[in-house]
Length: 474
Ligand code: FAD
Ligand code: AMP
Figure 1 (cartoon, rainbow, N blue to C red):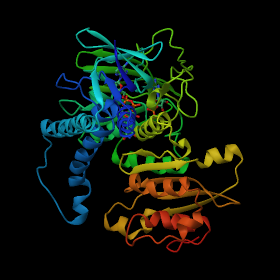
Figure 2 (figure 1 turned 180 degrees about the vertical axis):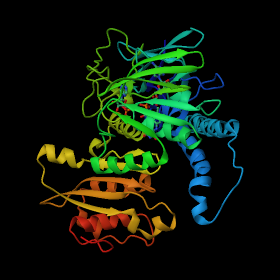
Figure 3 (figure 1 turned 90 degrees about the vertical axis):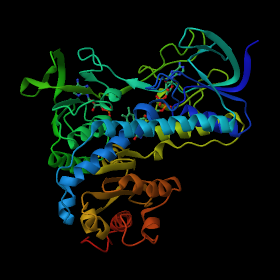
């Protein structure tokens, strides 16, 4: 007889491991199956996010920022440092140590919460059995009343620029270069392309980003994207819009690229190429043919608003289903599903999921963009406030960007907040709370914000919605 659980989670990324911990907290006998192999050849829990995504990219962004600041920020403070050098072994080693600390931490959390971890590839069979195939090919079957599919996503590969992970790399490869590429090509000016392009630019690479779409960062609010594009250009990121990669050939130690824009075909040679053209839901080998779980036209697992697949006891969460491919979105779905399984009132609101891009300056938003409101015919008011008028930002020598708040013209309810500037990855949280509580710009305008802090930009933007910002003309 196979071992029986209340809940089996397939995938231990931020969606799956959080679901497993919450299910166990609620007294459910829980297992989590994951196949990710770490750099040391052992099981590494935490999925894309902890191993080759959120955490390692932020570690390298922070290290590279420290280095960049020596030449580009410290002199303004009257501090000069001569002979600064990057030791890439230490630089990458620090990142690896952080990854290990966090992936290991999940193992400890599993133990503390009595989640049983299985190492191997999980396949859902009809009737909610899960077959686990170990790396050595051994097989075992476990069963459960509920199975949560949390298999995540993988990078999209372009057929004419296949990853060899030496010259043409995905996110994992670009987190592990053994030397700073002299010339780095990045395909796709999305979140991953911009963040990892920034890391290597700050260390001295000549970075060219090719983006097929004519508009920069079209998922963000247009005003915010415009400010960000200007700052990235100042930093030396060469972003070519309307430029579609059509060919990439490894020739010796270089990659020869062909891209097309409105003026025709162009050639570009780089030392390394990062292809960051998006990610696709990963369901390879996840489902036996007769489970009844459906995939949509983009290969994502079909779920309803409660993340239920329509098959009795089978749920799906995270990057493998609809909605933004963000760690915190998957985690909250994981908590909600565990609570629904336990008969509690789970909750997830995809309308207030915050987006953050950890570039310099940072970009963050939640809710609707101005274009979306226009397209939907929603009447709105706009309030903006520049960081140039925020004392703390000036004191930090980071007085770049602005906060833009969109509120309903009649009800004043906050519909979207968009920011580019210092610390906005943290500032967005206040706006998400206000939006989740169905708050108005007046609510934020009446709340005392500490002085001098960056959060005053949010306060002033809220005041500006009603044309009564104090520290700028209205
Ligand atoms: P994943 O993290 O992809 O985890 C899925 C896990 O399931 C993996 O371990 C996989 O091996 C395992 N698996 C799959 N199929 C099976 C199977 N059949 N059997 C067993 N195991 C299986 N998001 C943010 O919110 N903030 C960020 O700053 C951020 N930065 C990022 C930077 C980079 C470079 C990248 C690539 C992504 C970043 N993301 C970020 C996105 C984030 O990593 C994903 O949204 C998140 O990891 C999705 O979580 P998940 O649990 O759904 O899937
Ligand atoms: P994201 O999905 O946010 O990671 O962004 C990926 C980006 O890659 C999108 O903006 C796409 O327009 C862009 N993209 C996709 N294919 C190509 C290509 N062949 N050349 C240049 N950019 C591309």
